[in-house]
Length: 497
Image 1: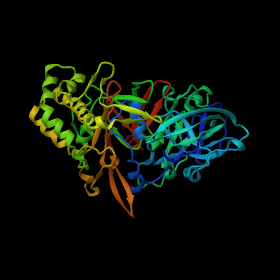
Image 2: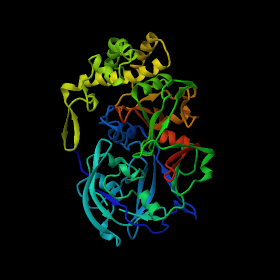
Image 3: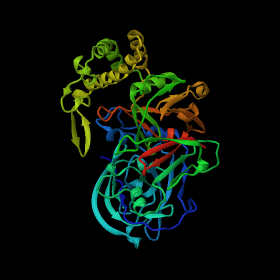
Image 4: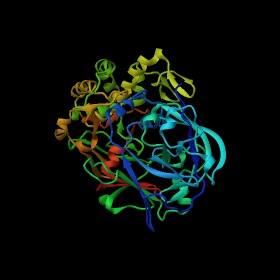
């Protein structure tokens, strides 16, 4: 089941003031932490696609899938314990736990490549010892809760942890993860670190803001996270604020998706999107990502299952939708999905649980693929029908999209020479367009002294009622300075400086 990496979960307990790092700037209004940036290389990016799935049983599964952290570029420094022990961590708005490796790990190679927390040498450590397991990427992190001081850029809160069922951490530049998500997604009853800052009145405003430096020619810092305020030097113009649409994640609704300044018709009635700094890429429903791939010339895979569904069942699906049949029953009506009154489609097949993980029954995998593509087709065709597009034209175009599907186990590449001719991809948030230019959604990755170009869009499908969902990761956050306004339950976006 893989090597185990001992880690240290940190339970947030109490705070005091200190300033321990040159990477930390403290003012009367906020605390700023400088982020470092690690340039991507092809070997690490390719490794991040191993053992992942595109179709998921729920939203939590999709979030975990995207958090492989192998293509993470941004991380910052914190200190734990007395005297302080320094760690590089990813500041992750899509999770709520803080963990770092522990010196109590003796049998994992990864432990020897990262800084480890030693409770033995900390005068402020208190043992708690309650075990817990957190899924991340293709494995999980298991450990025990502990109590200690955590110095986060002048803030002290804290932390300990014990096992990682993955060797991925061997290659990570950072040591652990500091979750900045909401309490509902924090396992256990303790308050996440950000809540503790507010309760201890360590920040004047109940906000934090994030700036990521995506300029490859810049000699500045890799990024900056500010607790308790907004650094005006990091954005241009005013922020556009939108209310949170979910109490479990930093989630919003956007109401439009344009390709090359033309509306696709998608999301005109609102699409859910999670703002996640722990996800490097930008994820959305597979058929829509295939449409983006088609527009930008990204490599994809030819799916015979997708073509079969479109060719043999596309017309029936269209007719059922036109007739007014409930969308969630269409794939059952055409015989591609089994229907369950409690859970809508049984599109994930039959699963068994082995050591906390799901395994698909091999006898259902093929049927599951057809059912999944049928679900994608239903979502896509609903939009086309609302747009009053012609049936034959839409089905022919969908057949082409079946040749541009994002490969769930691999990354998608583009020709670097064609970046200048690629179209902008724009999201409408709060009635304002937030375009991503090709230089922003295409990542240049090192390969033997040169570069290859990685498509920043990936497909991920979450069934209703939680899905479909979009995950706006660091590609979007690099283009737009973001304010996480906990006090007013909203998020704000402005063009990054």
